[in-house]
Length: 185
Image (cartoon, rainbow, N blue to C red; front, side, top):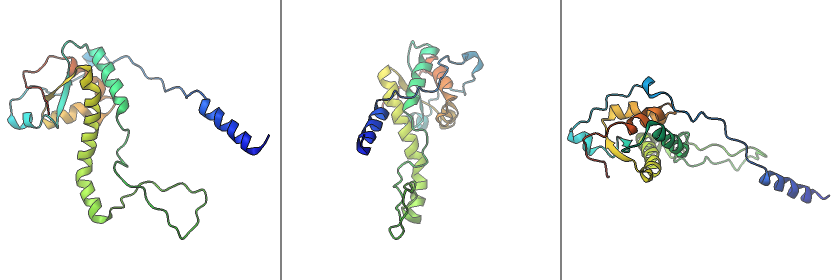
């Protein structure tokens, strides 16, 4: 058997192989009695309401805690796992040296000092908006609406989109609806 035929057979075996099973995750939500929500008392502060497009939580009338937990857990799959290389160009490789078999260097801050300063000022905002837009695209078609929150309450509820925050957000989403306008922006 020729080398190219062996290579073709190996490639076919790799592409046709069954994918590795995903790590087991417990789909059972934590007991809501063990969770403590931050103070989500609705506020009529016009600044909080106008910033509702930035700091909000999801709610759906009639949803149970278990259903909301499953929805959030499902939508968290679409969130990026790290923002370390968000929006960065790949670093270049020197052409004056040969580096056989060396992997391409990771993305670097190759925008210069001024670009790195400007990037540092806007990176967290871009990352937050990216996370929020992915959650909105997943949750809103499921019937969830958004209500405004104070920024500090939002930060405690979201907890930087940690896995532990899924249960808190599900608890908030299945609780009573606040007497506030729905965020539409």
